[in-house]
Image (cartoon, rainbow, N blue to C red):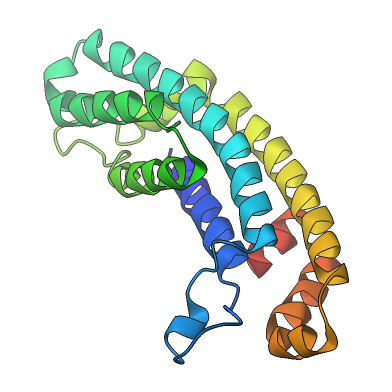
Length: 201
């Protein structure tokens, strides 16, 4: 499950990297790096991210519910009380990711991301330290990781298309303002494979 924690953290890093587009109307150096929420690339990427992340988050919650149930039914359930409570809380949070707008949905995903930390903390009393991870794999975790990977590649492809469309409309002055971002995108496009692209984010 620690791998899943990292991948969900990675999703947030992807979003944050995509959205950190300088505002052309910024008055100070600090505000120059704030998210420009009116930017069409921001809007398109946020919508795609929400579409990608919410169903996966809900599926993740379903798996965590199964893991919690397995722990409750285990002969050493008393040793996993803290983990069971944490898993149940995470599963509950995963059910309510979708909000009435993409901005609020993103905040819910950020909250879930912060709640994920410690989800795989082993019980000090347990005989098998990796037992929760084993249950996660048994309850559909391996398939979930593959589904996540497939959807992540589709998200990257969609980001490619959105960025290409966005950059077509940039004036020469805007291209100069966004030169670092354009250089980053060129390196990102040249990266070979999903893992390498993920690293670029």
